[in-house]
Image 1: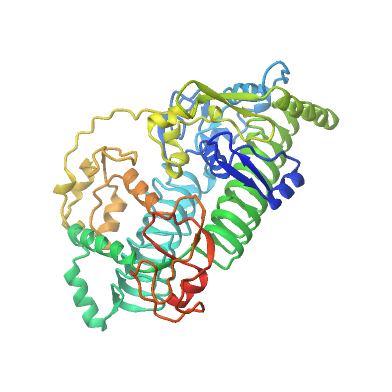
Image 2: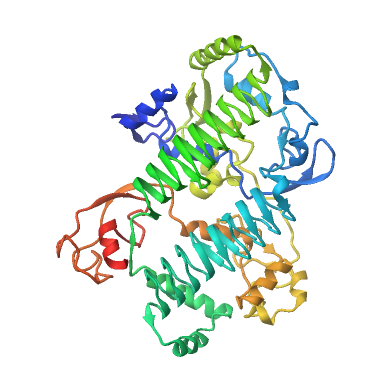
Length: 602
């Protein structure tokens, strides 16, 4: 094992034996950025939710895009981009050995047209205001979604129907404000629940029905704050809680979250794993330091790999679908093999390096927007022999004449250089997005001053003078008390631009949304969709892993907040089990190892 110092954050990190074996396998040097800095850098190239109205640079028609009107490159409607209206090989150019590789790649990147959105547009029905989606119908402002219908304001939505404000939801129906829930029907304001029906303000329930404010229950029904009731008494008690009113829901949510903190949780969210670490990892084998990953094997430092499968991948973010031997990639998938330092390449791609927006192609180096091509460098066609000879010369040149980013020094005095040789992902300057538009801001939040200091760009929000017609406190307490005229109202957001959630200041309800609230007897929201999304993000564990010890103290948790229900194998002494977890020490959650946790909730 080797210890290196991250040239970005200056923190030491380990290059372990399995890392070295993988780097040798795909013939790359070890990284000079630590794992969190590598992830942050990749996420700089992903704008998942920020949408703009602009013109298509090919047709002049109004379109919705992740790129604003002042983007430095042409933007085509996604339907035009994937048509035969242009061939990106027309932008081909020869490599200039007098200049750095990334300097030249940025110039190519800024002349080739970009797709307005990342969507499987033939499978979309009435779902224009969405991004990173496929096979959806009647959806609005959702992202990272597949096979869903009548959903809005969600992220990580798969096989869902009639569900709103969900994060990491799979096989949900009639759910609202749920986080990391699976196979649930009518789960409201709940987290980490599975196979549940009619549960509200609950956490970590499996196979439960008709529960409110509960935590860590299995196959229970008619419980309120973990207390069992007869069916008739349960519904009578439920009436007193007035969960259909804003005030009743607000009070119950506060009580529930305080109640949850009194119960232990497993050190990671995951099931059916073998040799896995990280968080939100399922059905994985030898998947280490991963987050939101399913059906992965021999993977490390991977994130948001939710479509089966991924194998032998390191530092890979977003997608899957039979991906193999990928390294430092973002948005690459669907039978992708041996892809390095690339983004947005898919459908049978192989042997591709430092390329963007390329499809059904192989053996590309430094290419943008190519389809059905092979043996190309900077979009220029070569013979097989010419390609490999030039590719090797460019790699040597990248090491001899590296690209250097200048950022404010750690002391705030002067600047320091971050060096990009062969083996590093794209520099931050190549990202088409500003820091606060990207997923990097969600997982690694920075204020404007700190972002600029680190060399990232920042976009000032456009000043919008919404004529608010109703303040949030003036909304009816129950959605059933609202008439159709509420759809014309401009509702002020309760945060009123005083938060760090990219608050829009005001919002409107859409017809199917109002119908959902009223049919499910849910109160109207008082925060704008941006604030609701970011409040859910804050409830999810961060992608920061550390070694901790089980907090089971023997008869009770070490903070005396929870009395164990069963005897544990370690007896009355403190459990000595250690693990890798995303629960930070300052997190109030009581964290147990697998064995202690199973003793309490199984």
